[in-house]
Image (cartoon, rainbow, N blue to C red; front, top):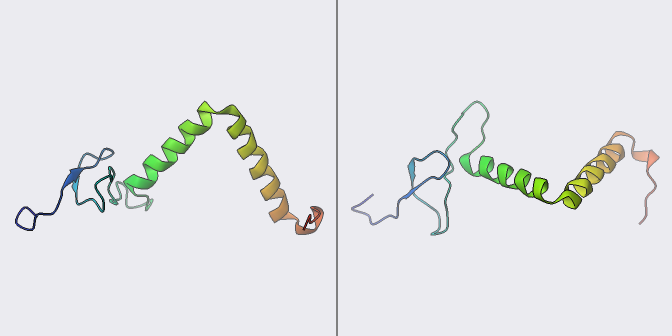
Length: 84
């Protein structure tokens, strides 16, 4: 990699070296646990979203109500009126 002048970075999640796709990339595409199939990027994104919901109670309530409504619509399609 050094002979090819490829940039190398350290993943902030697993602390291993990787070749970033951009200069802003901080997390690799490596799967820490191959059984789950989740990459370091996915793990960090889910944690950041959970922290954002904890910090904003209104967004957490909106998300909860939206999930409730979506689940109700998917279970019994005829029970919810169409507003279109």
